Image (cartoon, rainbow, N blue to C red; front, side, top):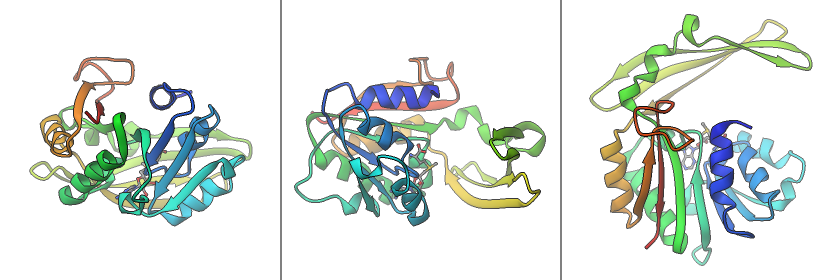
Length: 227
Ligand SMILES: C[S@@+](CC[C@H](N)C(=O)[O-])C[C@H]1O[C@@H](n2cnc3c(N)ncnc32)[C@H](O)[C@@H]1O
C-alpha cells in the first residue's frame, strides 16, 4: 500500500467503528478501505464520473456516497475523523471556498474529532519536475502497458496557481489529456486557514512517516482536531 494511503487509513481507523468523512473521495479507494476496517464512511465528491466509478466498486454499498462539496453535509451528521487525501485542498482554488470547507468539517466533527489532509509544499517546487522527460512512468496493466506524464504549462508563484496537463497513452496508442489548474499554498497560509476554522493543529509533517517539513516527500501533512 502507498505510504500516504497507509497514513490516512491508520489515521481514520484509529477509533474502532469510527464515523469517517472522506471529503473529495474521488473514485473511493480510501473510503472503501476505511469501510473495510469496520468504520462507517461518507464519501463526498463534486466530480460525478469519479463518484460513478466509486459506486461501481466491490462493496460500494457499504459507503454513503454524496455528490457535492462540504455544503452537502447533513446538518445533524457528526464524524470522529475527516480526511482530504491526495491534495484535495489544492483542487479547491478559491480561498473562501477552502476556508468554508474547513469550517464545515469543524462543524461536523465531534469534540476531539480529528482532521488529516495533505498538500504539496510550494517550497519543494514540484511543478519543475512535471515535464515529459522527468515525470514519465509506465503503468503495467493486464491489457498491456500505458505511459503517463505531467507537463507544467504556467506557474504564478504570487498566487500559487499552477496549470498543468496530465497525459496518458493507453495500450492502443491513444493519448488522453486532462488539464487543470491547482493551487499551492504555503504552510503558514494553510495553518491560518485551519486555525481560522476553529481547529487546533496537532502536527505538520513533510511526509507520511513523520518526517520534518522539508525532509519528507515535498508534502505538508496536517493533522488537527476540534477542541
Ligand atoms: C486528486 S483527487 C483525490 C481523490 C481521492 N481523495 C484520492 O485520494 O484518490 C482530488 C479530488 O478532489 C475533488 N474536489 C475538487 N473540488 C472539491 C471540493 N470543493 N470539495 C470536495 N472535493 C473536491 C475532485 O473532484 C477530485 O476527486
